[in-house]
Image 1 (tube, helix red, strand yellow):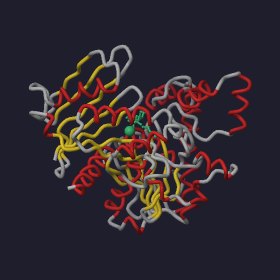
Image 2: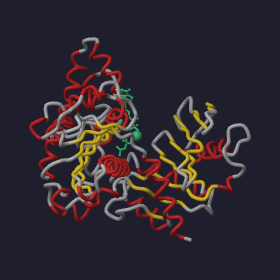
Image 3: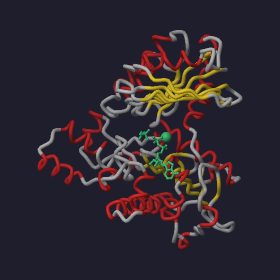
Image 4: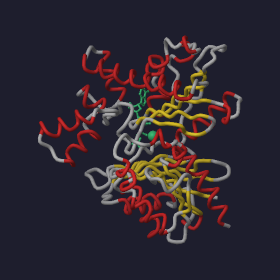
Length: 401
Ligand SMILES: Nc1ncnc2c1ncn2[C@@H]1O[C@H](COP(=O)(O)OP(=O)(O)O)[C@@H](O)[C@H]1O
Ligand SMILES: CC(=O)OP(=O)(O)O
Ligand SMILES: [Mg+2]
């Protein structure tokens, strides 16, 4: 069965064409700078054929028309006709309290996701544009929604409630939801396989460190807690997002700078985090480079970044009454040996014996980074959110038959 996986962001679409059940990726690519100057598609096929096409891509639907065109083109395509596509799976960031798993998309599901726009104003609108576009372009094809929030719906009420008047939760569903659920789910399952134990018997801390970053405490296979909250701003310091911030400080900033809600939102989402503190970049490699050249603000940015992760690891170990595995994933977690070392060193007191020889220089592949007799294992597991989406889509579409 051929399945397209779409991850529609505000100005980009990441896509992959899967063959299931073989799990083979037949093609993948990125439509970038949608609605901006210099929009383009980068596409690559299983056999290594690559192509970069520039064109006017004014909106998501045009972007999807382009990518479908490439998928069936004679020169770069992987299919003879669009009739070969049997399902489309979408990453949708926010599904509120309605869904604790992936679902077949119906008009009712679309309406429920539209209701979540206020909870994720930056993410849900482009995700929905992907669904609207496929509904128009391929109306007969079943679509499945795979939600970032779904995996964390197991969090108990004392974890997800904020200390605000309860009526605000009742009226507006203001509570913690958590994100990156497909990634936390995937790497925790892989960690159990690599450990050779059942997921239901393990206490796992998963650190998803990409541009957006979150940590989860997964006890007996269920998400107990995660660092992101109602929005993907809470928790770790990220590329451009603040992470945890005193609301009093935020009110002061709005007051002193005389900024409105829209600007304040941009400030905490796009101009903060590593970019805001360092003044250099939101990209870990650039900040590390600047720090190595002696840039003091870049150095303190890195220290802040590592420290927050350590603090959450300690908190989650206590919350779960112990930890068996700590997993690193996402662009930073998979590639950056310095981050892995500085966030887990000196933890012998809790039974973690880090092995720097195994860590140094390791990039983008599965590995265990602790000494063989270390009670707690530290692992690197490259995430694969697209595969999770493809597998869920496959299962749901098969169950419809
Ligand atoms: N070799 C590397 N060393 C350090 N950081 C890296 C490396 N490769 C990628 N990164 C970092 O990973 C981050 C992007 O993570 P990624 O998971 O790809 O992002 P996204 O959340 O957009 O999917 C960037 O901060 C980037 O600097
Ligand atoms: C929810 C979220 O933070 O997603 P991303 O990491 O893709 O920005
Ligand atoms: Mg990612």
